[in-house]
Amino acid sequence: MNNTKPFEIDRDLISPNRNIVPITSVVDKDRGLLVGGCALLDLGKHYGTPLYVLDEETIRVGCRSYLRALKKYYPGKSLPLYASKANSSLVISSIVASEGMGLDVVSEGELITALKGGVPGERIFLHGNNKSDEELLLAYQSGATVVIDNHHDVERLKEVIPHDKDPLNLMLRFTPGIECHTHEYIKTGHLDSKFGFDPDQVKEVLYELKQIHWTKLTGIHAHIGSQIFELQPHQDLVEVMIDLFQLARKIGHPVKDLNVGGGLGIRYTGSDDPPTIDSWIEGIANTLKNTCKARNIELPRLMCEPGRSLVATAGITLYKLGSRKEIPGSTVYLSVDGGMSDNPRPITYESLYTACLANQPLAKADEMVTIAGKHCESGDVLLKDLGLPNSQSGDILVVFGTGAYNNSMSSNYNRIPRPAAVLVNSGQAELVQKRELPQDLLRNDVLPVRFLEVG
Ligand SMILES: *Cc1c(COP(=O)(O)O)cnc(C)c1O
Image (cartoon, rainbow, N blue to C red; front, side, top):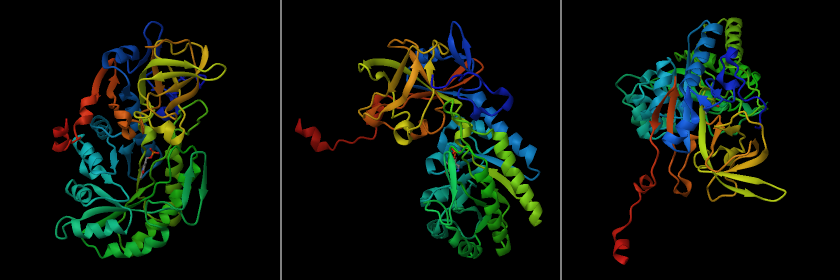
């Protein structure tokens, strides 16, 4: 284990992002590790590997923590949105909608997933720095709000949206000049980001939008980064946003929503120490409340957009151990039946994870190993320096914290089919994503007829 006590679950805090493992994890001395009441060994056997497993309870508890904290600390209206790019599927859309949350999308694919999952249009927000006409039109037709990001959005909306029907609701995204890296943050006068209007452009855009009577500007938006462990950046952000909120009001826009984006971090390994959902909301809500009071303005509707902190901890991936390569005096490689195609985060961001064997999750480490994927890429390594008990080919390896930015960023590199996904709850497992088959990958290949004639 690269963490000493991964199964010590912080139930009191009701903040799934503080745990490495799904909050329903239980170790049984005969059946090994159980999540959502299901033995992972059974899931691996029944559904095959690699397998994404999602714990419904962990997702719901996360949603409720956001909803509850907003009610507790913020006297005005509020609405948390799930940033669905973290893991977009019918079942997750349906879960967050049933909890009363809204949802962010950035493409037509994510938008139809949300709609088909049952998220009401008025709770859907379309983001993106290069939206297509089709995406803009579908957002309008489904009653979603469009978060305008740049002048191109404004120009396309003039073409795409009818001028004589119900107005399209808009939010305006700007670059707040607060930049977050994982463990530190900097404030800069000018930000070099591809997202949002530069602060210098905002005033002009607000005047321009005032002339476009078939749209209605209902709020302002900013997002400063991801996997953030500090509370101060979002509190600073709130203050910057209120300035803009007041400016929009002064120019005559009926703005009522203030959306501070997402970014709260999670515990991937024992050395990560993210704040609770409760304290993250508390800091933002208090800053907003106090600033509004000091300036004597009525409370906006407070919105936030958690992605990772809602779904990462709920997800685990099961792999089967295969080949073993020992380099004398150096690395022991254990290879698994997946890798960078189902989890591109280690090769992309050098992300760290925690893992164990499903049949003996608490056994003490006998050796240090490196878990390698099966792709033709030396960098396809999922975990380095993992302490594991003695293992055999065929054992099931459990990697924790894979519920966000794994499935949604997966690929078919090396023509490896995507894994299946199951949702677990109270001892039941339900298939929520079918396993891709190798022949599925040929679906869109076209062989021009002349190549058939050659042979
Ligand atoms: C990615 C993103 C989020 C979610 O970020 P997390 O770090 O996963 O919480 C929210 N809002 C916007 C605009 C984003 O791009």
